[in-house]
Length: 118
Image (cartoon, rainbow, N blue to C red):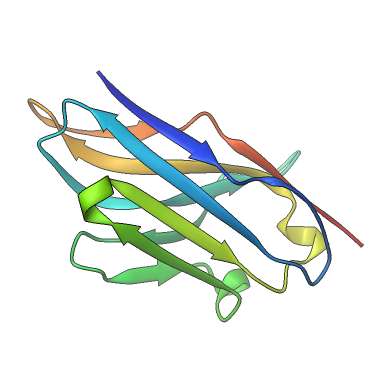
């Protein structure tokens, strides 16, 4: 059984920063891509950022230059550093990972709320 546990969400004023963390645990053979999606009320879930096991990153245009993503492969953990936050960044942020146990599957965290006040 694999679990992704997120932490670091909360309420912040516009222009502030937050750091999200997501740790994968369980019977893990290997982890390929890890990353973050977000879903605002009434909107579709969208990719925020992703990072491969080799460190290649991808960002949504709306967060480029403000967010960074990193991972600690020894800890099976991915981080999202969010700077210069805007009210439009308000959403539930979901961690995901493509993990090999007996086969490759996609796993999701439970979601963490990020609220940016103007």
